[in-house]
Image 1 (tube, rainbow, N blue to C red):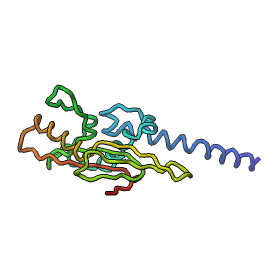
Image 2: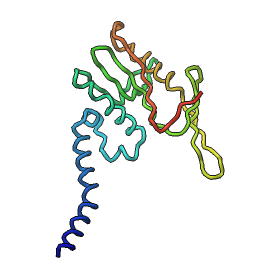
Image 3: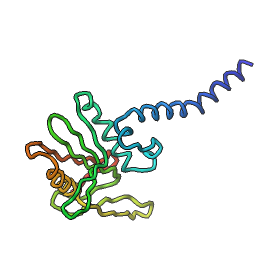
Image 4: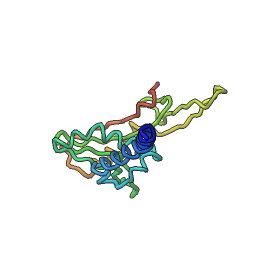
Length: 173
């Protein structure tokens, strides 16, 4: 009887612990400013690397909320050609506006501030081949975001550009 109770307890612990942890994390997530603003379901973070990268950036910076900082996510700003540009994340605080461009990439990232396009290089497999993806220079991308944002805010408000890459990549030149 004692052995069956012990096995039952271990079985429950093994299978219920992940569910309890998931429920706790989901509850904490729903309290976050990220969820309150985006309304992205917690499960979407698992399947969308971009959303997960934005949320991870927010988690690292959420302490600024304690001193009055406000976050905005996926902010659409009008461009001069009647199109829109999307800013991943803004932090508005007493020091100014921080404009974040989040890149939740892995692999090697090749590029510098003067290159129009950067390259993500991923190992492909045992053959030694690799997969390469080009993407627009995030420094130039954020500079454009800031240029358009400046049309909407007073000139004396400082605006700062922050580019965030995940720890899963290595920046190369």
